Length: 403
Picture 1 (cartoon, rainbow, N blue to C red):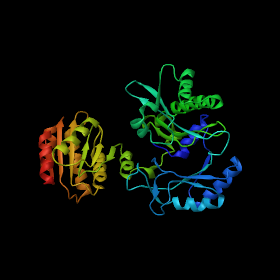
Picture 2 (picture 1 turned 45 degrees about the vertical axis):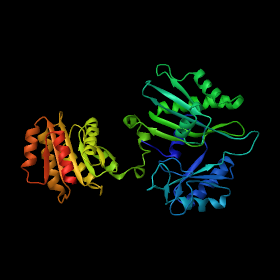
Picture 3 (picture 1 turned 30 degrees about the horizontal axis):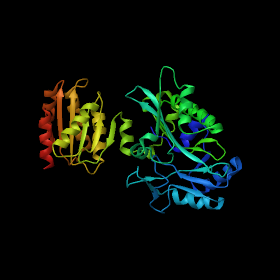
């Protein structure tokens, strides 16, 4: 589960990570009040106004309606409402959102931390994630902060610092010092970075996150180390242990069909194809998408109904798939291991009748427990549903209905 920058920063601050302070706002008037409060608390007279969406590249992105960027510096209090108003309610398009963009419902009014001093501010990159191949967490850092880490990894891989953490002993002091040393830090900045790394790792582990990305981590002109941005992805499977973090979910940032699928315990991901698929089991779903491509079609979605498919979940799956206007056919591919095929067949027939007016062809492939009984139910239903037993039969029928 992704969370917004302002939420991620509050999470970091809770665990002792020093951050660029800010206040979230939903209107231009709220933005002005936030800036006044921030001025009183931090003394800042310049304000960084940041669109809050679940996507990166906001500074280079553009708000379609006004042409404003997603991150804008306001150099006076008077300009805050105008800049915030140009961002709020607009559709911000970045390289991560795609051409559709995302609507901006909130902005973060943040303090200016790039003030002059004894030395120039310096940006770094830092991330923590699970290295599945090694079975441990890894801290990734780079002196090339503020840039896409993928671009740095491709063009200058030697600038990526990696430090793996043994899960049996946790982060050790020498490891945090090694990262700070390799970043070229010294003196008070070195000490601050070591503290920053320890606090960041504590926040990562305590929240059961799957990824932390702080880009940039800033060394200020007076050698403080701050998180200027924060991207946090929480492990969905661990949210049951963190009801406070689950409350941070913003469903307006998610695909409505995926949100609807979650209500019924369905795993759904929308794709760009023309054949909807409903399957039980992730591996079978991947194989089904391969079948669709081999038959000349393109999968329109990944939809796993799990091992307890019934009339209610099948109906929910139908409705979700049919929301996509690009779908020209639906392939239901069920292996009856835990669930019986005749039960699924009855669910398909009931759902079909209940929804009504389904104008696109449906192919149902059943295999496993009571597969023949299931196929008989489909064939004798009198509905415009095609049954198949073998994978090649299902692929042929998909090709046939697509013409």
